[in-house]
Length: 302
Ligand SMILES: NC(=O)c1ccc[n+]([C@@H]2O[C@H](COP(=O)([O-])OP(=O)(O)OC[C@H]3O[C@@H](n4cnc5c(N)ncnc54)[C@H](OP(=O)(O)O)[C@@H]3O)[C@@H](O)[C@H]2O)c1
Image 1 (tube, helix red, strand yellow):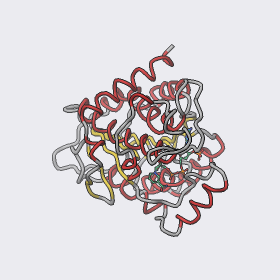
Image 2 (cartoon, rainbow, N blue to C red):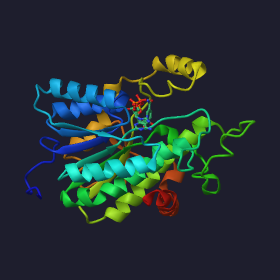
Image 3 (cartoon, rainbow, N blue to C red):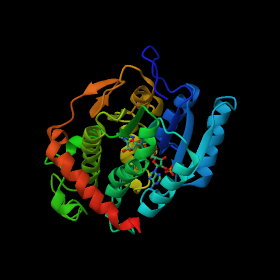
């Protein structure tokens, strides 16, 4: 139902669907959104962790919050398609979709869909989930789509390498100044900004907005599954990192604040709009990425 002119937007009583809420930034955001009166749908790969999170969120709100659990492995397009069907069947409305789950992989792993895994989880999963749920978001009258990007997008200085989408060059040795898993990760976070830009363009006049943000450097479980060296690096970085609650502040603000109503296609950091790097502002690359992503998700349709 459309809100009246004087009614301010907030998540109170709204339905927020969020990926990656079992840990780190997503968990901190889910707790705060539940505390502010949102009902939640959490999309997670581990049933045990998802149920534990749901129980925690219900307890936090004294049983008030409704928390639905949806299971999906975001490396697998068929799993995303299955969960989207389940969400459409169970959720009559979605007011906010938060594409937050993300990861970095030190090795080049190809998924069953033939996609390099960092690209699959960080870019194609938000793309596919969002496009599959778009009709429901539009039906909700006014809705928001928020994607967790990163300042790391600035590492992809030359933009998306459309000739090497499976990142053979990025992972090849010897690593160059633009090679290696960090740079691949940066490229996927650049894709988050370009995706938001093109999504916003396609959603113009629909009442649905798209935003992305940089949470800053945050102490979470990020990069903990990549061996001892990665864990040691993260332990050192922890000293300079924010808490997950601080990292989630801009996400919560984008979901809950009336201030950003109607704003679309923008990149934010620290509760304000920020300017992403030049490759993230290319409308041509944003369009090309959308078309490429459609192609890369087409085969899992049948
Ligand atoms: N930490 C930082 O400094 C930082 C900085 C900039 C941007 N970010 C971005 O912030 C987002 C959240 O990361 P975080 O730092 O909070 O890391 P995290 O603590 O590792 O949380 C990542 C979340 O994503 C989920 N996830 C990962 N792979 C998945 C898959 N294949 N299927 C389903 N869910 C999956 C994880 O589920 P499990 O609990 O099952 O592992 C977890 O809930 C990511 O997009 C990341 O790129 C982080």
